[in-house]
Length: 110
Image (cartoon, rainbow, N blue to C red; front, side, top):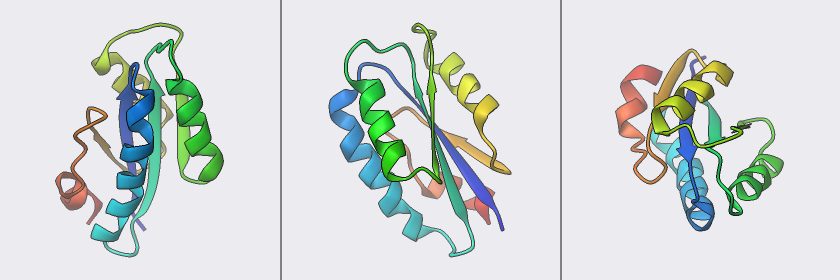
């Protein structure tokens, strides 16, 4: 059974997290039923409510959400690398927080 780890860095993005997390969950229906998902969400040193919003999402879906908290802003690339180090899936996809496209990951998860 393939497991897709979706890694998304966030930086000062508290207000968009409820929207993107709903979209992530809804997009699972686009994949074959045997694909499982893990969301590795990286707070890249935000000083607003980003981290708390990510922790709230993890609390709602503890089996599939990991939150990585970085001590300071290291940039999207390094935040994604930090997320990859925590991912457990046999396939990974990464995306800027607002443009994850599930079909780009479909081939990997098949």
